[in-house]
Length: 201
Image (tube, rainbow, N blue to C red):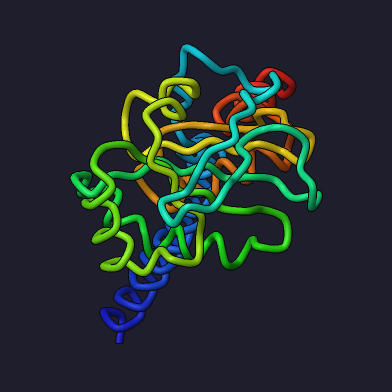
């Protein structure tokens, strides 16, 4: 009988100890989530800065339509310029997420796809990945003007024609971070987290 009582006491001590450990771990996980900043798109660009007027260009799409890049919007929407390439494997994996995001955010943003090279390669690319619903510009000038050095790359231009956010895009989270940066009116998510950390210190 004494052994049963002792074993029950030991068991309850273990249960209470485990509950305390689990509670402490839960608190630590919460602290960790607060400390680890979301991974935003890396804004590497020597030509553009967030907040400046985006260069204005009138360009012809691959299907001979005219599209204006930069400048104040005629339909009060922002513009997402997304650079892709048929030779870029990351671009191919991102295309479904890009099309989904463009559709979900279509009430405030217009997607323009951009690249350079031989037009014949791009026509097959458009057909293969179903990109016919968005303007597709093949222009080396556009990439040079906007300082695009690595792909995939994106620039968000707000309705007033200002550069709202930009960066190298390697995941859907990076793409969404550009939208978040525009909404919060910051250069990048990293910039926002740094400012918030400075305010709490």
